[in-house]
Every structure is written in structure tokens, then in C-alpha cells.
Image 1 (cartoon, rainbow, N blue to C red):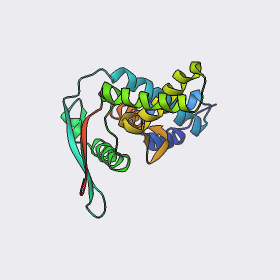
Image 2 (tube, one colour):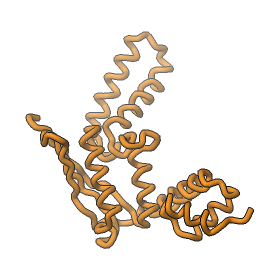
Image 3 (cartoon, rainbow, N blue to C red):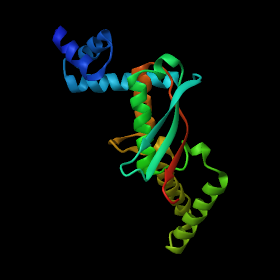
Image 4 (cartoon, rainbow, N blue to C red):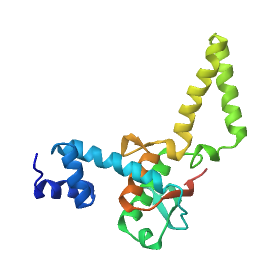
Length: 197
């Protein structure tokens, strides 16, 4: 099937991908716009994975103050260059992440940041719950692991569902931005303030 310039332009506007990438995506999906978008997202995520090891020494601190000024967040989001840190896309990403922290109140950026004490305490609670419910001994470890995964998805920012699109995690949302901006991006730290707490 012949791909027209207008199809390529439409896909480029939708995704922000390069012209040649859009053409390849349309050819690979036989001109189906939705499949081409999915193709580009998958390729972008794969490309983003390769950038994850790069150093992130630039970036910015973003803020979010909720209506009524009783809740606010500060978040440090890093990237590779000052050039990307100054783009509107990066500033918007940082603001979205600050808003996510305000909405969901995570404890840490990623699961590796949780202390062994907190994880051990949660495991102990889940073990007690499983034993008291009469579950068989061999099923208890699986139950604990399942509950622990749900705990991580609640308290670890990178594993939380993105409040604006619950079909993706914050980790996936950041990877999409890595693919779009062409640089590694990392959340370094955040703090959430609530009046009276």
C-alpha cells in the first residue's frame, strides 16, 4: 500500500516522531493510523530503554500547589542536558510528576528506596493475615508476594498508575518522555507538604 505525505504528516502531528519514523510505522502497519501509533510507542519505549543508564546531572525542581493552598509538592527531575531541561515538554513532565505526588502521596521514588524495615514490617503483616485466614502454608509465600507487589504499586512513584492515564505507570510515562526528548530522565527526590501534618 502506498503511504501518502498527508498520512505521514498526520501521524507526525499525533506522535511528534520524525518523518522517516512515521513513514516506516505506516508501512509496517499497512496505513492503519492506530497501529502505526502503537508501533511508534513500542519502538520509542525500546529506544528509551537504551538511554536509561546515562548520567542525569541537569534538570529542574518543579512545584505543584493544590487549589486552596493546603497541599503542595516539590520534585527534582533530572535529564542529561540543560538544553532539554529548558524545553516546555520537560517542564510539563516535571509539573505532571509534581501533581502525581500531590494526588497519590508516594513514600519513595522506586522500590529500592524502601528500607528493609518497612518491607519486613509489611511482609510480617501479610504473613499474619494469611495465617489467620487459614490459607495453606505453601500458598502463603505467593500471597505475601502478591500483596507486596500491590504495596509497591501504591507507595513507589515509578510503579504507581499515572492519574491522567491509568493504563500506564509513571515509569512508562517517563520512558515515553525519554523516547520523545531523546535523553535519559530520572526523578531524584520529592517532598509533599500538607497543612497541619
